[in-house]
Length: 348
Image 1 (cartoon, rainbow, N blue to C red):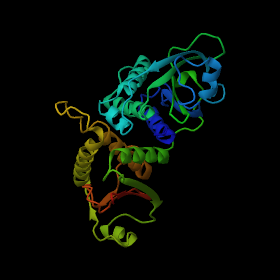
Image 2 (spheres, rainbow, N blue to C red):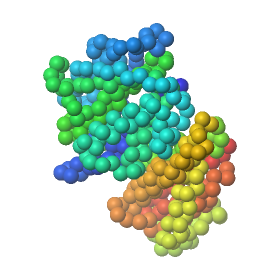
Image 3 (cartoon, rainbow, N blue to C red):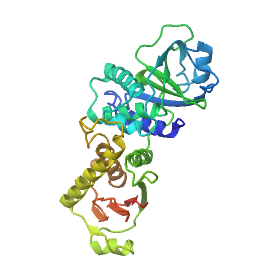
Image 4 (cartoon, rainbow, N blue to C red):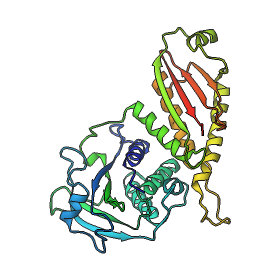
């Protein structure tokens, strides 16, 4: 399997938002960067010791790291070898506490780096760290490079950062870099609310599969409604095919979301287990990552259409709570000026 750079970037960007904020600025306290590159194929060059630093720089696309004035230069590299693990659903398994050897190392390295600067991580962050580590190493990873860097060639190495380089069998390389935001330039692409919605839907689909080939799809649309929202009839005028939708009051919406969370978590168990698992092992926690991501999606969409700290003025559902029967479903959240719709495609 090839390195999934897009999924790694999506996960890294969401992790950056979930980590504690800088108490002085309110901005993310950490930069989590994914940089794609290339290296010799494993068949052509099997690393038995770390490559020279000049080659490490080339493979990992150093010094480019954190934008202008955020360059990093390798000063030392460690080659780490592992037993070959699984090559599928490794991120999902690692997020649920079942990492293979390579992912376990990355989890430990990430956790130690982040906790040294921010204190203990909460459970949802730990689960997302596990997913990131599993995806980074999921293609039967047997070795990786841990790279120590400095801000100038030959100067003292930075011990509060983490840089890990992996490559797949075809020579595609990927570097994960983590550093305190206070020590690097501002993010050139600060997270937008629509981007965060996309990150959430991408991760949800990674855990929810109807069968071996079809994942559950989530599409979110936001548009102005141009209505004075005072009656249920107005919604039905705007949504011409509103048959099958029901109006949800605050209590009913909370119940619908709670039942959907449980159904999604139960469905996600399938990708957190493998045929090699010991039946006597404890079952993965059903709320490990799917529930926090689903909550983040709802909270972020609500913020998008209603504003900070506000609730939707109206909510409607068709097919929620989700039961994943292959019939599709919609959840409609209505704000003062905009409406947000989550379309769920669970067809096979």
